[in-house]
Length: 337
Image 1 (cartoon, rainbow, N blue to C red):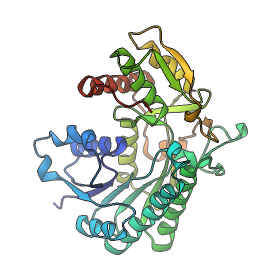
Image 2: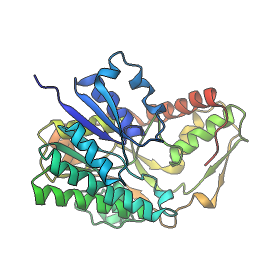
Image 3: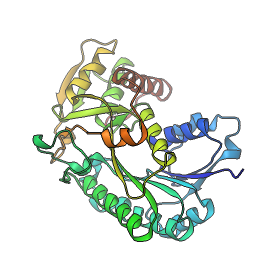
C-alpha cells in the first residue's frame, strides 16, 4: 500500500507542530514540513524525539515570499494532503508591517496553490483563513456563521480575506479540492507570546520566578472571545481533509467556552501562587480597531464531521501557564512584549 504524503506549511508554529504530532501518532504518513532557515525548532522537540522521526519527517526549506522555493518544495514533496498554516499571523504586528503581512498571506497563498495546481493538483488542501475576517461584527450577527459579512479590523484580517478568496478562486477555477477554515480563538502550549493569553501566562510565570515585578501589562480586556484548545483544533483540521472533503467549502471552527479577555486573565491569575499581582493597561498593546465580539456558530462543521471540542478551558489555560513555567525555568528571564 502506498504511504500518503502530507505537506504542512508553518510546521514550526504552535498549530503546525501540534498537527505534526497528531499526524505522526495517528497515521503512517510521510510528513514534509515547510520551514524558513531561521525558523526556531523548539516546538518540534517532541516530534524529533520519536524513534522513527528521521524516516518519516523531512523539513523542507523555503519561504512563502520566494516563488521558486515553493515550487521546488511542492514538486519534491508531491503531497496527497496539504495543511497551509504558514502566515504572518500576529494581528498587532500587521499594523506596523502591513505590506509584509499582505505579501506573505495573500501572495504566498497564491504561490503555493499555483504550484500545487501544476505539480499536485489532486491533493486535498486545507487553507487556514481566520475568524478575524469578520472583524467588528454587529450584535445582531452573533453568533457568527459562515455567511456573516466580512468587516476586517486589521491589515492581518484584510490579508486573511485575501487568503480566503484566493483559495476559493483556485478551487472553482481549477477544480482543486480546497477546504477553507475560519478558526476562532485557539490556544495552548507553544502559543506565541505576542498573543494576549500567552503574554499574560508568560508574565505570570516570570513573576513567579522573581524576574518581573507583580504587575501584568495588558491591552483591551473587554473583548469577548470563544476559546478552544489547539489540540482540539488540529484534530478538527485532520478530520476536515480525511472525511470526504467538499471542494470549495468554508467552515467556522471554534470552542464552546466564551468569556472576555479580562475574565480569562482573572482565571490565569487564580492559578498563580503569587496573590498580589496587579493589572496595568499599556497603550502600546491596544489595537487601533479591535474585533471585539468573536463568538462562532460552528454547527456546519460539526454536522459535517461530528467533531466536538473535548479539552476544557481550564485545562487549556493551566497547560499554557505550565508551558511558560517550564520554559522560563530552563531559559531564565524572557523579554516582555
